[in-house]
Length: 224
Image 1 (cartoon, rainbow, N blue to C red):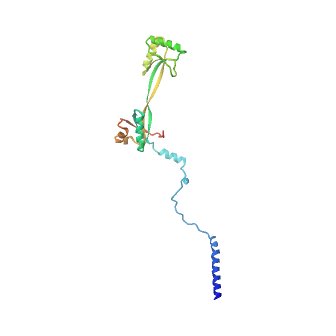
Image 2: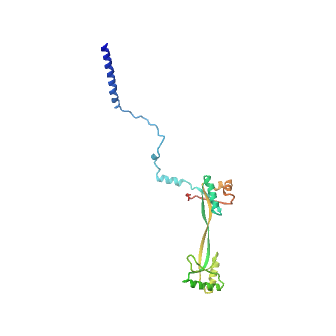
Image 3: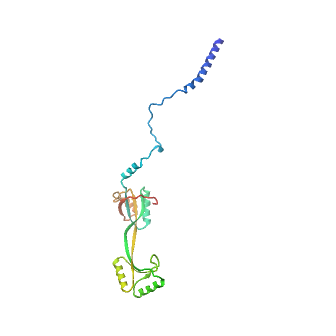
């Protein structure tokens, strides 16, 4: 009986020793890679390669220019700012603009600056004694000279110049070009057809009678 117990104890010790060494041998086994890999459904932004510049330029060229409409004319910036605010609150891109109108040309008859103030005042007295309206210019390029009138028609200015020459007064004529600006509100991405005939224009304009024009869009920059 004692011999059987000893043999059983040795058998258990041998089994424990085998389990202790055998896992180290298993670590040397090669694991085969799976023959198929799962498809990738996610991709990092850093892994996305941008399209070549040539392809980007082609895509840009394919885009049609967007259309803008402008509403005007506003009497002051308070009216235009009110409309811009209302449009922005409705998710539309809008801005106030100063659009130039047609040029206006006026013609001024004048005498160039004199060598001294005394000479200018002496000539002014002679002009006024001949009932010729005139005054000394005090600012600008021709300060120290004499203004003899401003005319909207060139023929009138030439007529006065000729008349003064007959009285012994040499004069010159200056073309004064004036460009007037009008206040308009430009909206991007809204066609004239959709706006006209709808209640939106009446609602946003506050009852103002506004003209609507459609034009190609320029980039709207934030204030831009």
